[in-house]
Image (cartoon, rainbow, N blue to C red; front, side, top):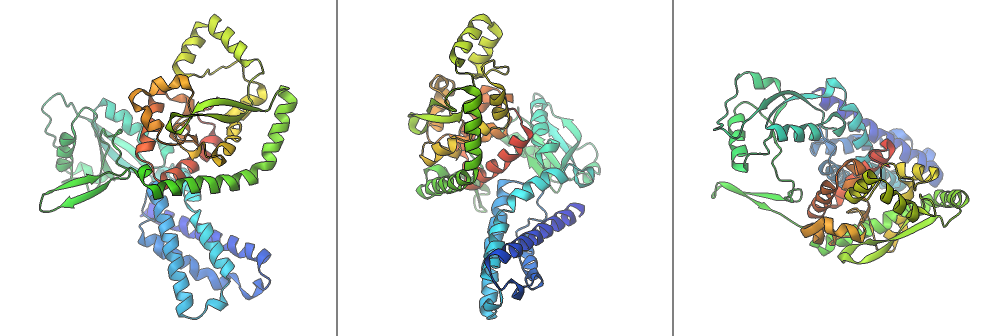
Length: 450
């Protein structure tokens, strides 16, 4: 109940702030703003709040892509009902169309503040819920990663019961009354089959009203899956879609990329010009660095970045790899160096803030890259993708992606490959939106950048 009240107040406050901003903007665009006092529009907040409640947003604990999609759907439905009310009651002339439309647009952006707000408030102990975990050793590490405090689930691991799958494990809770003190039970048994995990669910359902299952399905594209139940067959069928093979979804992604990139590029043009000038003055070389990368279909293209290295970077690298065995091993493993002597002081700042990536906006406008996608790679990295390269080549590489929001240089190369594969197989437009939102958080925190 504490969480429900807190989130309800959060949503209502944000809805009110959006209304206040829309009304303030109206003072610059409509001449008779005095005829539209803010009080006349307060019922808009209640209307939107009702549909947010209807979509179950006040009880959702995780700021996820699914929640973002619900917010957008609730906004659109609220706007349709709002226009219908104004039309039927013949009060359309009494309300400013600018305020109504501006309010809808601002509310469509609510997933961004909601995501950051939940990330913060769910760290407070009084809003966190206790869970008990049933797992093996590998599963425990997975649970700790999934439900870490900074991930925004608001769940606290209070008890752990280790399960040895090498033995005949028919599980019975040790204390039948004990589970009722927990918000949920989490099952994460990496060494068990799906059938065995489902068997444990069957046992625990007698004691828990909520069970979270983390099966070993990281390579299975289930985000866009639909579960089809059948009473006659007493089972379910997973309908798994590949959205990137749908022409309409591809068109939506490409249109979204181009439109948002064009707007962002225009807004950031003064910053781009300033950075160009600073690099020109400090590096005494072309401020724009270009390099061949592998793109969609395995074809090569020139990627653009702000120059962050010395003009003689190739010679410095060759000399370092000849003289330093540790640096050579690091380079061969990740194609990166944590303490790279080639990077200039300004270049290091650009890299830690990811400002060096901004010229790639022009790659997006040229249709060579996407805002979100797999990490662009060089020819030497193709072999590291092995049998999975066709997944990488199925889409345009992205300025940001799962790799960038999952730790960047702090994760090993094999995991980078798996993240790219997972993204392609589970793509949706709301997944792109959530990655873009999380990219802002990652850049501000400078997670894994060097």
